[in-house]
Image (cartoon, rainbow, N blue to C red):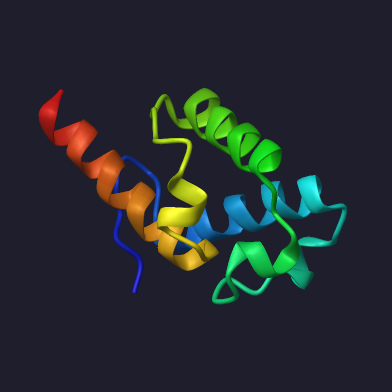
Length: 92
């Protein structure tokens, strides 16, 4: 069940992440299973850093460059982003 956070939900972030990761990996977003570790798709450090930059640009949220390994699936990363966005909104 989605958790609303300033207009962002786990579902919306899962979709956004799958689309962005698919772009980096030259795949279709439907090919990205949100429960499969990103490393199994061949996500490398360059793509992971680019993803962190996209998150910063699109959500004004700075995350550690290791986030793609600390939260290795799309679902795990989406859940982390929802929590971070909630903390940012609460701490502002």
